[in-house]
Image (cartoon, rainbow, N blue to C red; front, side):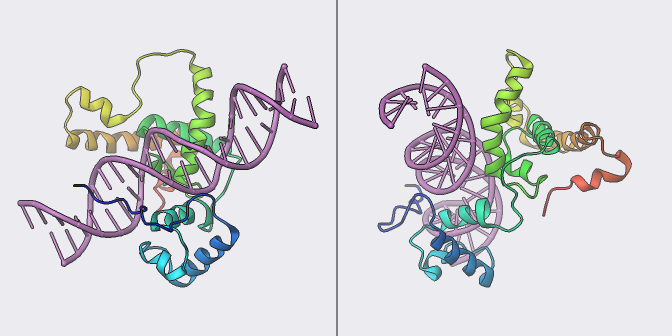
Length: 178
DNA sequence: AAACGCTTCAACCGCTGGATA
DNA sequence: CTATCCAGCGGTTGAAGCGTT
């Protein structure tokens, strides 16, 4: 017996959010802060499940979000980080605080995948995901995590090169967003 | 003008890991 | 230790918009 789905209650609204719903959600979060998502539908009167509220806030309503028009700089970072980390969009997004993981994922799937395919022609047989690739060569998760840390360090250096950032001063700027 | 196919992206679904009782 | 709950994550879907015929 698994955990029951959170959204199977009757009377839960789905689909696009209306401006009114957005206002209810934003004003609630302005007063109470994000978190305790379970309480949000009851306290706001929104007929949405907690998951839907959290998603709407983090991907659309949260302040400081930049939408559309990815810069060359951002694009390069995404390409480098994806090559290193695989499809770990939340981890990638932590390096681009103005972008959401959903946005980066969408941009990758709709723009960058195609772009890279064109660039590389038909390269075959290379893996996409770090740990799943390592698993096949019998690497333990602990070993893989350590390797990942090293890789991240190397990637930061590589990013500095790719983005023409001064290596000695700006490595720390690439720390994930808290 | 309208029918069709393609692209984009907001939102959903199912799963996982961490926290807690 | 086990069961349950919740937040968060990544894959996927489908409606809307856009371009082409």
